[in-house]
Length: 214
Image 1 (cartoon, rainbow, N blue to C red):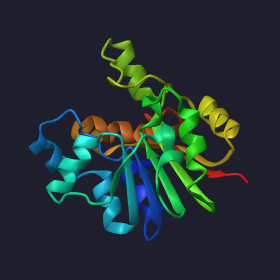
Image 2: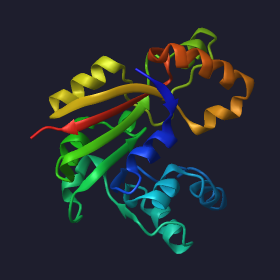
Image 3: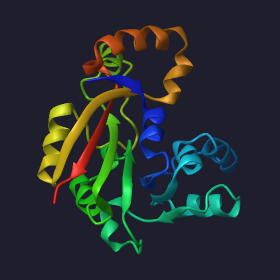
Image 4: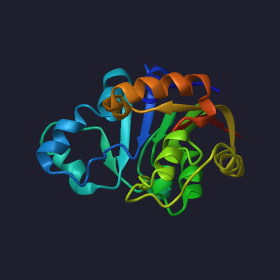
């Protein structure tokens, strides 16, 4: 198990590939100006720079705002729990589901739907908050833990692996990672990264690479 930068690792996996990016928009609750500014710093923006990407997101008004403002023209409105209804052609080398599975009422529906668009040798890259991660445990101990407003599920390495197996995936890599906003904590981030690099099983975000099985 390793501990690393989430976005940079995803970009390295996706570079030069055909990529389907699920739940790609984000920032739906922010004012339009802030949303557009942050979109240009997002993972989807970075993926678009290095790969042939199609994004899927259910926030239709945000997708339209981005399109009108020339931010993204590669995002399709859709529900990741109903991927089979999308009129997308072809299959993809890499499917990215970054920090979205914890938002879903029925995550197995997303995993089943992904199979339609994954190439036989394709990869699913999935990230989600780690229920047993040290950052969340410390927050909980000091009464500062707050679950994401739209989070309805919590995963650890074992139950996420079980879920993927149940829906026809083989887990090839299971690591933990940190996200870009963690750097905002300065010295605390540097110390935390040093500790978690040595003890990656306590990292705050799970990072899974899985392959669909025939």
